[in-house]
Image (cartoon, rainbow, N blue to C red; front, side):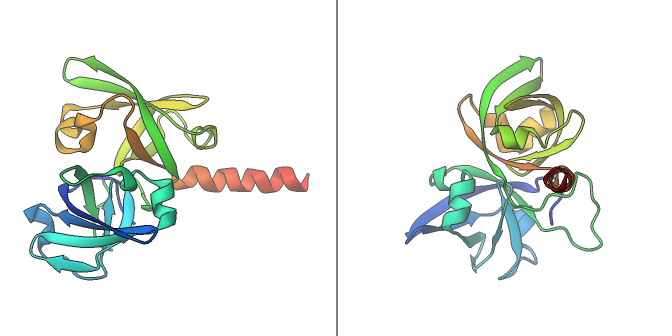
Length: 201
């Protein structure tokens, strides 16, 4: 479980194909290396992966075919930055919202509207994901906990403060870039319950 509060940005140092999977070697910021161990969970652009090896400041992860089909991890290149967050400790503070690290699908940046230092960013998503979003609700974009501003049939918007633009990859996103989307778990449960009622009616 994560909060969607990005701890820092790492840098992709290696990408190694492993059949249909890949191994990702990620250089971590100094603030994240202390206490990190083999088997720990780290969200990379919002996708929960397991540490399989540590060499100094570089941690290795594996992403399988299912993960690559549902996320933007397979589109990363060596040198690319990535949002990182360690899993939430039991006694940790929840400052964002409950983020599982289970990406629902890939969205696309469709517009970036600047108003001084603030940015309103729109993302196109599959209609099935847009149905799970509500204005003033929560969404994770590339692992960042954000509040939804507007929702339409196949897209939604968020308002980004200067701090978020500075410390996450959203500050360097361009129109057309792919982003990982995880909708709020509450919306998924409501959708599932409603499906059950309709099918039994």
